[in-house]
Length: 331
Image (cartoon, rainbow, N blue to C red; front, side):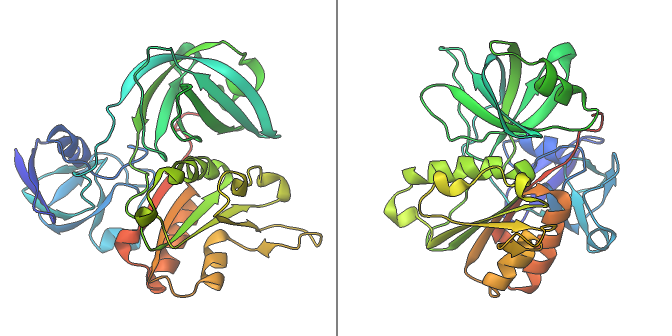
């Protein structure tokens, strides 16, 4: 048994070959996380002292990050007492994850390769979540896939998902070729630690690529419930894609106060909007990020690129939050 201390002053015990993330959760300490498989970087933390071993490959870290002492708590196990630098979410009241039945209420094509799925929960279901979190949907033959929730919590007990087709994906085949209204499925959640922290008085910026716009929509819808003294100074949403058809969701329809900036990386001459990548466009518009807070969701490449750029632009480390979408190990 090893003693793990974190910078906030909290501590917990971790067993040999137990992930640091699991040990923290057992003790009531909440660390940031998303994929739990070492493929994103949401659970990144820095080793101040002590040693650990990797239980599987840390694909979400660059070699430079590894050299600087960063590890992924979801696949690392302590091999000595440790001191870690990590965001402590101990003060957040996370809803307890549970497995419950659900039925498909609606299936709507938002784009050729994006399906909007609305799930209906049982009338007696006690299910709550923080906008930005995700669920695992358990489909035919027990296939399990993760999807961000795209709507703020409502009294009608409906959950909205935005699902992108994955070539040769088993669950994609179900959603796009077999799924029918009233199909019975199961879900497990809510999961993840992508949610709005304190944003009062700051310039709130969302970066999204692909269906990464889904949790952004959920968070924007929830912001109307914030009191006046909790509101950010400004809200800007950068939505990125390759072609115009990738921009399937204009979130300005869900938040009149948000500035919506679509960005295309492979646009033709008819495109009059922003070009390049969302992180680059943000720096063009706001070269000094000292008063900003950024929430990035989408491809792992975008998130790593954004973090590197923003560090040099003065964005405080604790004001960058991300949720990287990574493909299932078995599509």
